[in-house]
Amino acid sequence: MKNIAIVGGGLAGLTCAHALQQRGIPSIVFEAESGAGGRCDAAAYLLGPDVYTDTFRLAASLGLEHDLLEIQPIAGQFYKGRIYHHRVSSVTGLLGFKGLNIADKTLLSRMAYFLARYSAKLDLHHPERGVSLDDETTAGFVKRELSQNILNYVAGPLISTLFYYSSEETSRLLYLNIAKYMYNIRMFTIRGGIGRIADRLAQGVTIEQGRRVESIVGDGAGYLVNGRAFSDVVLAVPGTAVLGIGGVDDLLDAQDREFFANCKYGRAVAVTVEATRPLDRCYALSIPRVERRHAAAIVHHDFIDPSTTATGHHVTIIGGGDSVTAEQLLHDFAHIYRVTPHEFTWREWTSAMPKFPPGRFREVASFVSRHRRPGLSFCGDYLLGPFIEAAVTTGLTAAKHCKN
Image (cartoon, rainbow, N blue to C red; front, side, top):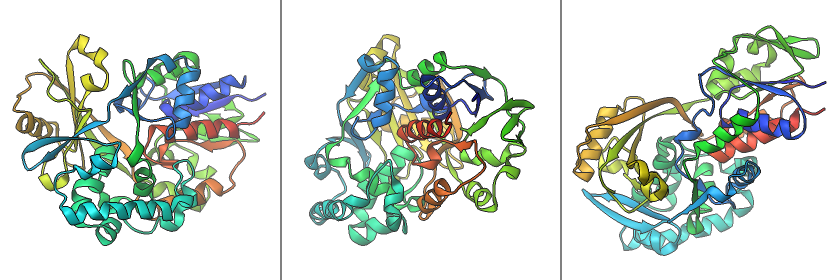
């Protein structure tokens, strides 16, 4: 009889537990914090069902399909002290980016050429197909093949507003996998917040909250997790936390230990303020790094989900990096919108998004193809890409590995 221990109650672990429950396989989710969900509630929107296929299927299975709201694809761009708006789902929208001259706009068509040339290798769910493109940074690729301005005002902000780290530390494969959808993107949210996916998942599975797993030991064909016997173990913690669990070192070979030692995440800080009125008519304001601000994006929740206006106008300022502070983000917000908030809350994620520098997808492909001790599986966005879809997809994959 199978009984599965899932270590980590973020979106990946909860998805895995839900998928196992659907197949009649019992599991227990061990969550170190007092509440499950991990970083799920930090997300403001989903990319469309043609991109986030597994996430939309999961939402439907949880009865949330009628709470999906499509977001108008209107984004803001901060350029030389002013705010401009454009549609992100069209070529004409890209042509409206400030900071681009005629030559830059002509070069944008060259991006379509690269996407067509590499189309067979670009698959968000199967990045291993594109490992031959995992050889240089986004910054290096865009500067060489397009222009510095396109990097500054298109490619760079796309990376920093989605993942809160820079194009200098991001593989061109990740950028190309995103750019594939830029010309026809659709965005959605769930009424009441993306965190409702994790909340609904948590209601249907067995979770032991506030229970940190201190040790995992191989015991015959099974495992002892904090001294309790299980047939299988799924590690659903961030990649940087795997080797910190006692006994895991002994379950991995040298290559796997090196893989986790090389796993890196970007830090992010988010400050949420309450405004007395709507401050902008876009889902998010992108702030290019060349503007020399600490904030990477300012998210307008009442534009994304109008139902939130019943409790006020919520705005979240987000910045990434090892030293960014809430005070710096508030200063940027006040400078841009000429509003000084008197009340705010803030949150720090030391492991906000997994990083995929050049070569990392190649390491991931090697990791997922290796054989290891039966009954030991892994899931998390560090195995696919820094997306909600990656957490969901790898959670489903881990559940498939726990066979009867």
